[in-house]
Image 1 (tube, rainbow, N blue to C red):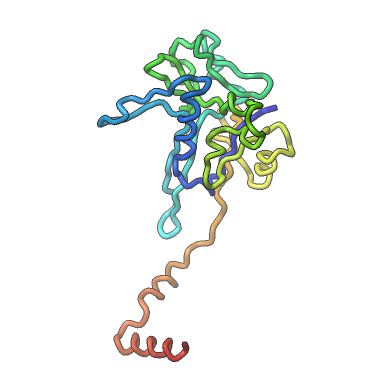
Image 2 (cartoon, rainbow, N blue to C red; image 1 turned 135 degrees about the vertical axis):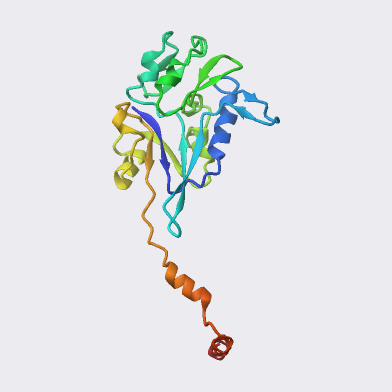
Length: 236
């Protein structure tokens, strides 16, 4: 079993609901409090497991805003685990989730330097490294109804841009969507074999800018505009 997330870039509106829900749930979860630094000061900051990047692509009038949520990819070949000198970073064999043992972590930052995705954050208050856990304490909680055993970010997403499932199961929704929409992983050339995947934006027809401008401009003289207005009134 290889559990992970799938992000539909076409549906993500960049609302940050996933990031807020993630911070809220994990603050009381397995990793302990996610510290805020000067939350009401001039330069507020803090520890976040989900961060959303925003990019402008294309040129007017066919430009578009792409929202790209990023968190730990729970790589199959995770160098963050390999470089950890204390064994604090480890990968579960049963589901492929990468975790950090807070009791073993000494905050040396080696795992953060090894991660090319910037998915790990040092909590300056605890002095330990923290990262996305895929809400491991939630997805296996049998006290919850089956439909609620999902990562917090998936449950809260208003546009259903986030999916969760087993990539080793060819019949799972994430595997099926990946085949249908050409799902891809981030920086595959590095050989980390990330589990999380993205679905690319769908192609859209070009906006007929010349036709739209012609409609806006309409007749250039007052008599022509009046004549057009009268014809419309008669047609009604």
